[in-house]
Image (cartoon, rainbow, N blue to C red; front, side, top):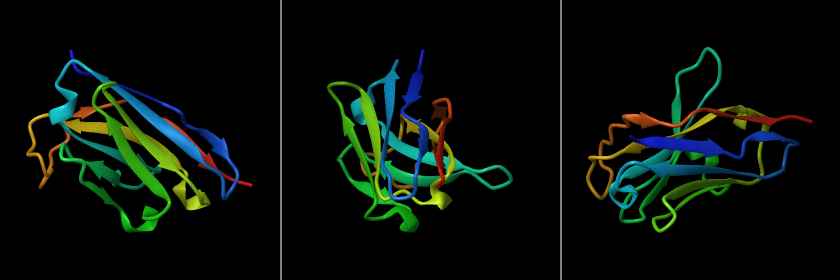
Length: 123
């Protein structure tokens, strides 16, 4: 059974930091395209960051230079380090996996999702 267990959300003041973790099981993590998404009520879910099996990373423009996605294949874990947080980063964050995509994660299709973790940035 594929499982993605995310943790690490919370509340922080603007300029603060949080780190999200996603523990994966039930599939070959090292071969999967992994990503973090976020969603606010009334808006579509958007991809924040992506990490390909070849350790290629891609970021949504508003988070470039502030967020870092990383993975440890030995621990089957994905992280999202979020620094210099802004109120507009407030959202429910989800980790996701594309277990059958290519090593560069071109046109990924994310079929497995973790539970959401709320991140709130407010003074």
